Image 1 (cartoon, rainbow, N blue to C red):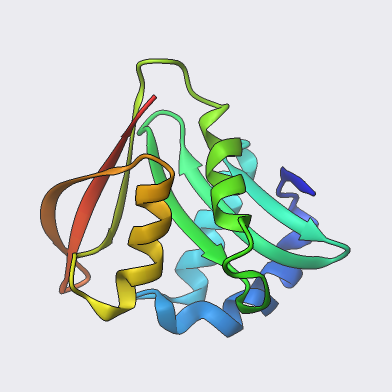
Image 2: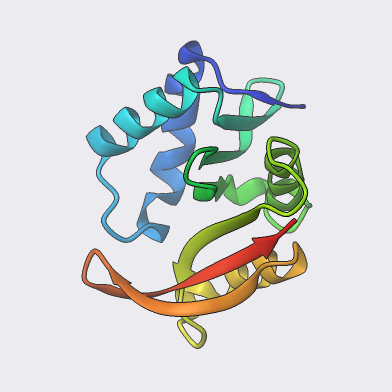
Length: 143
């Protein structure tokens, strides 16, 4: 069930993050928890909760029109979890809005799954960037 994240979900989310943290360049638990708390407070975080197991998590900013974080539990990958979270996030925006996300560059083995997911949801490649001293790429979704 996709729903807003609650403060009491943090421990459950951290258990998932232990499994996926190596997929995120520059991941630091303290910074992640601060961003998660801020997103929860602004109703800018959704979780796909499967009977107490976090199948996926998405954080975004309405003001910045940016998808800031997307993770899927390894046991639930390739099952539409990420696509469902992205669809739910888009309901928070209006037609004509452009949502951005920063991910791995084309050709980076770490980004194959993420880029395929974003492309399947309608994101298009934009400029290349360096984030946390790592080559990345911005992608844009036009609603």
